[in-house]
Length: 240
Image (cartoon, rainbow, N blue to C red; front, side, top):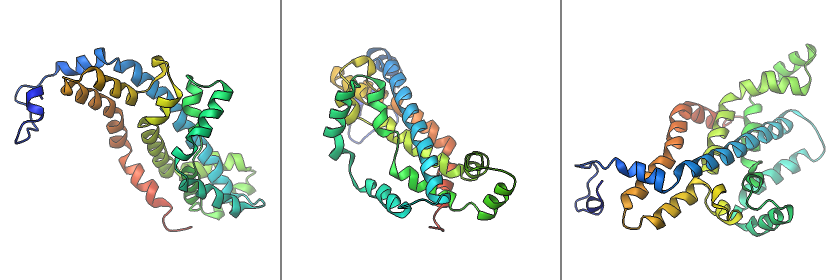
């Protein structure tokens, strides 16, 4: 839309004269390429970390027997009731003491594990028939081999769902990247959108174009993983 059409009454949803150059203005003037690259790096690290740790924790809670198993699982679930904002100060102090401010480690490490992921994968692994584990044990499968070759493939919908959730949450982070970084070369796309808004006060359409650019990866992810997302959320809904 043209700037004079954005606040028009009645609202216009289809522009009469599309301003395609606003995407170039947002990309070049807002340095969106740099911010997108940082977001992909940080989001990729967080997503892989959450999936791996959730698989290991979920498998342990579903198939292994060890002392205080139920207590530890309840403790994992309890972390879901603690807002991240409550731990921001201590996390910032930890990152500072480790020298991880203005680094990719500082952006990603606090989010490499999640109680939600452990719960989701545990519920999915509980759907795996115990007969399969017994048969695999008779064939000489250890826990690691059984997890990689049998349990994880059967829990693929839940793994895909967790991947989508982790990617979405990491991609949309704003407060933590703002606090932990001062170097503009390491800042992510959400902060880039805020800076684009500040530098384009009279060009709201440029800000909207930047927001669309930032949303494209999320739309692509949801389009390709929509079925796996639904199946993953419903797979562990029967057995607890």
